Length: 84
Length: 196
Image 1 (cartoon, each protein chain N blue to C red):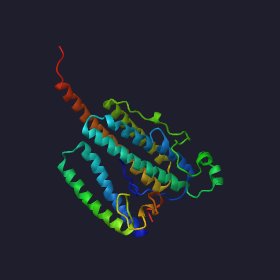
Image 2: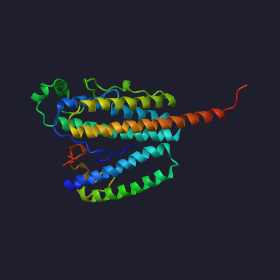
Image 3: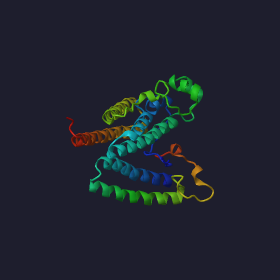
Image 4: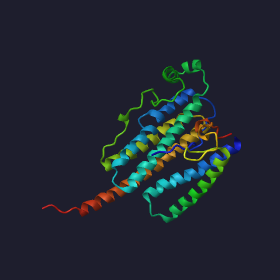
């Protein structure tokens, strides 16, 4: 669980940067430096999520799942202790 | 459409259970300036926002608010988990919540008043809607400051501080959207033929 939480927190960090840049780009769509940073972070996020999904299970119901259907697996986001 | 991602936007944790404090957090779960109000307010306004930057801002921020609603719900869930009903009965608001909802989440405010769409506005005039949104962000920021003033749990404070900062960023983005909207309105006015 410890490694899983560590990976999840890494994903949360990179994802947060992507969310914040998304909002900034909505009102600054021509800021090239911000756009490049957004695109670089999206690539990093994709890589981290791919690794996480391989090891611990799918993050959305739009991923293919090994049998049996993995989407129902615990823990759900509110059931995780993040600071362990 | 919306896609659920099986993770929180921020690692919301608590040091220990505290059902009385959880009852205060309901202000941001189902109160007037709650994350639920914010999400539905912005998402409702998106259909009639005329400028592309505005449509994107309302959809992006509205979506993030639902992720914040999930974070507040998680804090309440963790702060009340496993507390016996006899303990809740001694605390007032947590006891009243237990009678009608057990430990289930239900969108009401800190005093138990159920959430209502009357908390939000969507008037169709984009200038008025954006002013409503900026005011809502400031009211939510103030609510988080009240909650932080009363908190003693360091982990709860960390999560509320993150959410407070997001209100400030959202206010900034809505302000920029309003500037872009005024530019659009000025340009449209110049294009219209002068009536004689």
